[in-house]
Image (cartoon, rainbow, N blue to C red; front, side, top):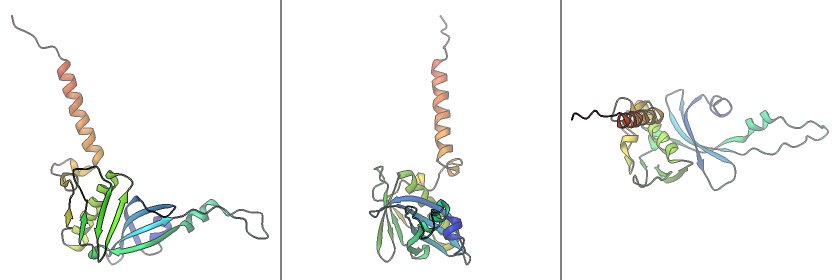
Length: 181
C-alpha cells in the first residue's frame, strides 16, 4: 500500500487497520503524513479482480500488476477536521467507533485491539502535528495513554509482564514453607 498508493502522493503511511465495510473486498483505515506535515485519514478499498486474458494474447495479467491496481482511496479527511473520536462503550469489547468530522463516520475495526491501535496512533499524531489534544470519549484510557513506564511499548510487553508475574506467583505458591514445631 505504501509503495503503490501513498509514496506516489508524497505521503508516508504511519498506521493502518483493516475495517469492515458493506461493499465486497478488503477495506483499510489508513493514517498518512504528507510533505507539509499534513496528516490524512483515508479509507482504502482493495478489490482484487480476477486475472483476465488480453485480446490477441494468451498471457494472463501478472498477479503483481493486479495488486497494484486494486488499491483505491474512497474517502479522505484531514486530522485537523477530526473533532472527536467516540469509542461508544468502554465497558464492552466493541470494535466499532465513531469519527466526528463535519459528519459522523462509523468505523468497525476487525478487532477491538485494532481500534485501540488506531486511536493511539491518532492521539500521537494529533499531539505532534496539530499541537492539540485529540478529544476522546468512551474509551478505556489506560490502553490509550499508558500510566506505567512499560505500557507504552505495546500490548505484547504488557501481556508478557502479566504472564511473568503470574508465573512467579505460581512458583512461589509451590514452594514448601518450613513449619517450626
